[in-house]
Length: 350
Ligand code: CP3
Image 1 (cartoon, rainbow, N blue to C red):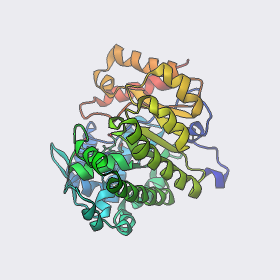
Image 2 (image 1 turned 180 degrees about the horizontal axis):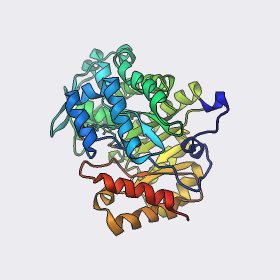
Image 3 (image 1 turned 180 degrees about the vertical axis):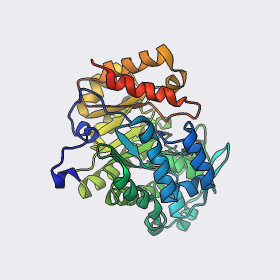
Image 4 (image 1 turned 45 degrees about the horizontal axis):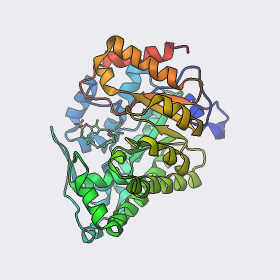
């Protein structure tokens, strides 16, 4: 709201708008979660994982937990990328020790059961969580809304679970591209609705997670990852020109350059496998970069972690950069290592 009030812009938003900072803003993908004992406690009280996502006071609580502990620059609303298929009417559940389980959709006929009109009303609790967070977050903390990208969400909808090679979705995409495109188009529309509603509810920045973008061939990447991201970013930009979007096409390698340039997003989140040198040279001139510490270094801690953090800071300082991980925090992460990470980033002078 800073545009309307004339208040100074928050650090993370300034950075996304192209202003390099002396001290990089920092937040972490999956910053709320099982590595925090206070999360495990709230999670247990909620019952199921989706109950936690759909109970605004509990979702607000777990969103705030990492902010209280670490004073991060941004807070990502607690939810999941699979609330969109759930909203569309595909049954989704999270099974202990197994991850997400969905009734797989394998033919174009089954898509008729999905209802776009159901998404926003079904996800009302997520928007309520955002409204609460706008009131309860510290004034300097940026509130991030998010969604899964169509390709990644489709891999779960078609496979019915986490698939190591995204084989089921790929088989459909390569066998019957026109049919598969129907699903991608539906998800593109659903994602635009869901992200728009999050902005209306108070999200100041959006992130689009394409976790499995790296498993696609170049042509399929353009069609199922880049093109939908371009449509989503374009639609949001038209409605909300002041809300920056961050894209995370994980594993895209050199195709990340076209993705960054052609989608018109403000920030690119890079994964751990990305070459720092290449990213600095080829990607950072196109906009703000975010990343990319290996989440496993955060588990290890010690000298190797410190060295890893400094390597990332050295690579990207002096131009717009947000410190983050190359993928989400893993459950075995000691919370003290996160405290140390934040101290190192805030104390670093390049
Ligand atoms: O703190 C945050 O980052 C906000 C919340 C958030 C979650 N999931 C909570 C969650 C976000 C942004 C996500 C994104 C997400 N969800 C992605 C994209 C990013 C990535 O990590 O690649 C994907 C692929 C999913 C789908 C998903 N959700 C899977 C495969 C699983 C099971 C694996 C696992 O880690 O348990 C989930 C469950 C999930 N989503 C948990 C959390 C905290 C753990 C569930 C629990 O508490 O039991």
